[in-house]
Image (tube, rainbow, N blue to C red; front, top):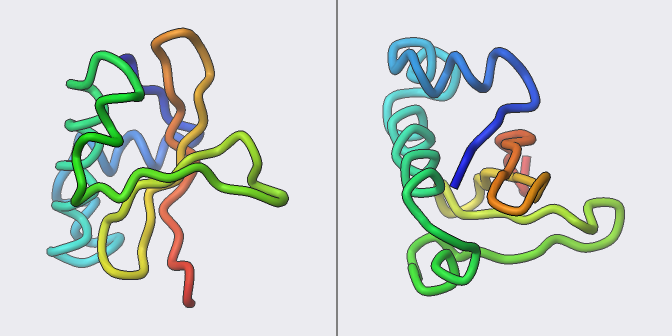
Length: 97
């Protein structure tokens, strides 16, 4: 799967672990990089549903057309399908914050 990033900062957090750690803390920063790597390795979206810890799910309401996977208990990585085998990382969001 090809992964694009909505912002340069999201891309830099993926490529520079120290920036990810400064942005979100050590656990969440490393988890972000790990999850983006998983997204890059899958061949299609059906595989995401087969990885239970990700808790892959579509979003609704004003986020219809976007999807999320779990980073921690309440923090999600939100992305959109932007091509046949391309996704765009939209944001990291705390659902309860």
